[in-house]
Length: 409
Ligand SMILES: [Fe+2]
Image (cartoon, rainbow, N blue to C red; front, side):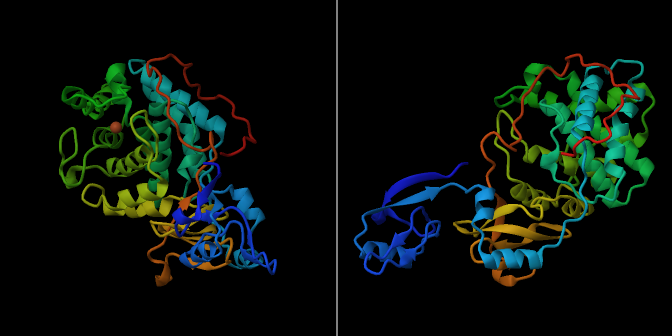
């Protein structure tokens, strides 16, 4: 959201509002309140006592570049002193994402194809290479923009995150290759759900919902018929909506019967769904989504949640955030360090005061939280478009050359 400037009566001013003009003492010429200050009760009292009837305030988050430009000397000094680079993150080129997204679309449209298993190997190969070829231990899920269509893009995102979780979970290379295929095909059963139900913008009827819940079983059946998929892949697909408390579907399997692939895919699947905008829901912020996952201890495996917490990067070092206490903004700040396993509690430096806020280790800041600055219009937000999943893209080829120097996204 861009910053909006508006004139407001000093009688209706509230603490925490940001003044968008500098107030100067008419007698001495001294600056009393500087433009951009978040007003407190004392300053509001000052304005009223001086008989000032109205002032300009600004609403919305400032541009990160603007914050960078106006940063105080103390902030610059502390940022230089405190910055510790993030652990390596997964980087996947747009070309790979596009290719894998189209490959998944092909798989959805050609479940009866004789070379289905071979095609799935080809589709997953580049993604496996991209995720496992370096020592990346974390990822920023918003970097993935593989396809405009929800189902296909979601499949690529879930496969990527599942592999990273699996890697941090300690799975072998061979297992990770299988997990990639299970992640890419976890919703393949949706190809058997009519489009009117799959893409319905409104609430599903009970019957439609019951049908929708069959998609994991349909997926299992599709892959089982092929006879080329391992039991781990079959169970990963069949059980990705099962819950440890036995309240999942399609079977309501108890915890001990749920395969580790399904436990991992479930975390990636839920997280990706939470942070994605759909025709019928707004996305949750990554911070809130991570907190929701942390609270799902009845449903998701603790080890998978912990692995997830170590694998997700929400606030990259160097990014601008707003520090708040749930009610009002404390200060805009720059992220200088992340702590392993605590993606919501980075160390940040306030851009005005230069104050160092260690949200994990300093008990003074326990009540504070950080959120990303709102993206400028048209940027970053994951807006979904639904298209016909039965459309016919080109079949994936095992040796489509990839540009060597694709810019990572
Ligand atoms: Fe699903």
